[in-house]
Length: 329
Image (cartoon, rainbow, N blue to C red; front, side, top):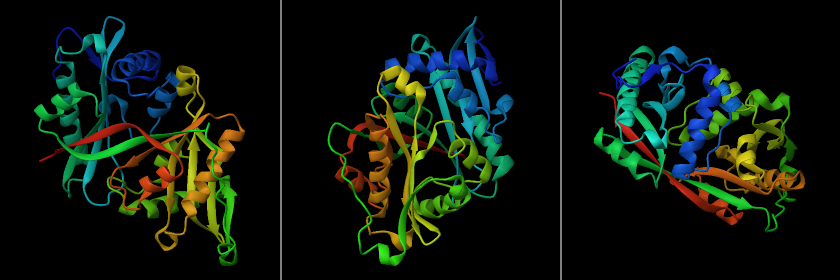
């Protein structure tokens, strides 16, 4: 599995490794301040992605019975322009500065080349990795391997101790046939298609196939259908906001937080405040059911002006994240 120091055992990750993987990530979160929390069930679910071949796309590094580092490479079935592959890697804090991060990234770069040649050799490709902006060690490693900063995003939070504005569909909307409804299973496939249309002009986004949608979106155990809202124009979904609850986050922080996974409006209906209607309904319902705050991530250069919308609804920046890119030539 590539070239790793001879004092570690390198092997693919198995679902039975999930507890140790979660412990590694908890140690890293404490050191890096990412405020990202995962439990074994989250990680087992991640390995259930049918596009992932764990024997080829994952590696765990072990010293005795301790997982000291982990790396995963992800590829995408559908493309818009460039074949963007993604990595996720972590070295346990006590085992850093021993060459494991460089060894992991070298292995992931090699695996990304293989995946690109296997699936999308007809287009240009790049490898993307994301790190919180305060992680200077990651920045140094990426730069030394030829990565460059290419994109910035913010994690925003909105405590519910301040009143949540009730933004309803106005009288001028209703004659147009607009209505606000909670998510139901009958909207699952229409929402996937709407989401693919909405995000065509968002950097790094690619159309989601049915398998990906089921694993990472409405099929995720974190998805909360009762806290997800749609704006319909007749029978067509024109705007939406979807909610997720991560139980590991609540267990670690003691604060029940609703994560807003997706917010969007189709092009023909933008500029009418419909996303604010759906997001306001989501937050108000979340507060009524015991949640204490909301969070979401947003691209700093989101073309729809989403950052301004979120700020008007009371969201504030909590952390900044940097996407690094490496052309695969």
